[in-house]
Image 1 (cartoon, rainbow, N blue to C red):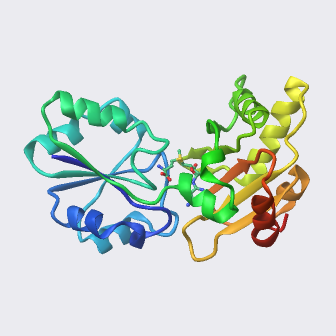
Image 2: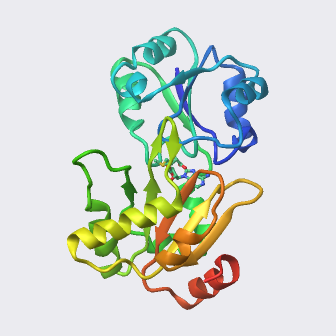
Length: 250
Ligand SMILES: C[S@@+](CC[C@H](N)C(=O)[O-])C[C@H]1O[C@@H](n2cnc3c(N)ncnc32)[C@H](O)[C@@H]1O
């Protein structure tokens, strides 16, 4: 059997009791570290808390060579761990399909996701979010501006946009870097930069930071340690505005 388990947002204690029990009874434990990360716990801390040895996986181990995971799931109970919810803003549906095609039983144990944490931290209503986008670190000769198209389309339709920020093995994009890249996209396309951004750092930690304001304010703000995320709000409803004023210094 292959069980996809969400670890929640910040440290080893964000997993559900059901998820923890499932890990404790597993024969093999895999953790992917490329779609999200638990910044409050390294792999040693997780191994100690779960009482299990963990095999750490990169993107290629899951998307191109999932053989080891599938074999372990054929031979016993394998669990596949992901930060946040295992099926939110990941490509793990593909792994579940591959498992099913090989006759392997699968299951999902859900967890808190950044997708819903932003609603509580920012006060922006979950039903007002449109399509999300991701801002990648630009590479030589590659600077995609499609995230700005998504943001603009959402604003035109009175919808908020959740903007995921790039994670690389050696760095995590900050709110300041993300806002600056969105400004550069606007400049390149001859468009206006959105008027308000909401930056959020370390959702799920004891001290998350939430700051709302224009691009200049967010670029100058100190959000501290990763992970970071941005929301570009549409026209704010009265209570959303009041909430951002009280909890995010708008
Ligand atoms: C591709 S999404 C994966 C979402 C994950 N599966 C979930 O359900 O939470 C990962 C991105 O979300 C944001 N993110 C995830 N966890 C976060 C946290 N605790 N605080 C702030 N941003 C976070 C970061 O921008 C990160 O690069």
